[in-house]
Length: 325
Image (cartoon, rainbow, N blue to C red; front, side):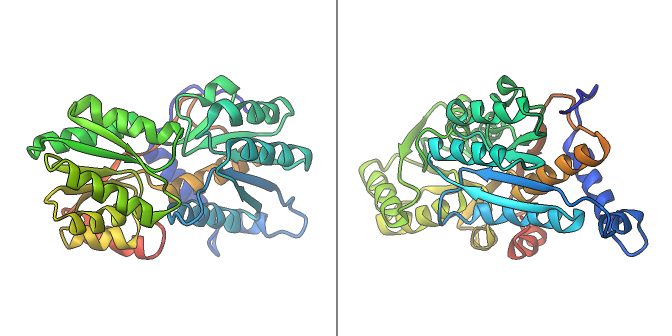
């Protein structure tokens, strides 16, 4: 079980901790010697997400998690299901297999949270990440790594207002996801002239058609806010097909979105740094298992929002191409 901390740890401290562990894995560091010792225990950590097939966002989560696992001699067991009930079953399966630690997303907290709470009650160190920032404490989960989605949404809305936007369309690609709903709600708080549009993110041609039809129907839309990189690219094509002059902004980042920001087709991205989320979820569990550490003092460790726009894209595009941003 985790011991409660006394202070919240900021993102800078979390990344600094990650850097220290990485440095400790160099040829000069004692951490590598310990982790690769034949007598050292190899821990098994289960990572269970609500990944939607075809969404490149999760490649970064997994890349960060696997990097931490490689450095720390951890056996990472990754599984996913976008159905809330099935994801809860995956958590129960991890409990039954007696893994050493569990990292779980809580996009559907009402269904998945109770299963995660069973892991905590069973004495399995458990962290939440990516989704469920307002729910994880209800299930006695002591640590969370992710972005404040409401704050991120409000920040996006403020930038749209400052740029003189008239009406925004916020595209939700996964019905019932608390994180996605929080993003659009945040946008509307700071830019009230915002309308939500529900689409099926698993069917990108349908996403493109739905956005295009809405833009043709309502020419007063000046800004399209998408909540994932693949959806942003679909929105760009929809805008072209509809002959719309609406600007496109997005949450999250991939190599193609980075190029679109460089080219001026996308105004900016609100990045929650998923690579860091995956990395820190695994690293924090390992630190707890090997040294009794906890991070955050019961409060979330924030990995965003971090804005990517024409002022910093040239540097970040390199990392996006490497699948770390």
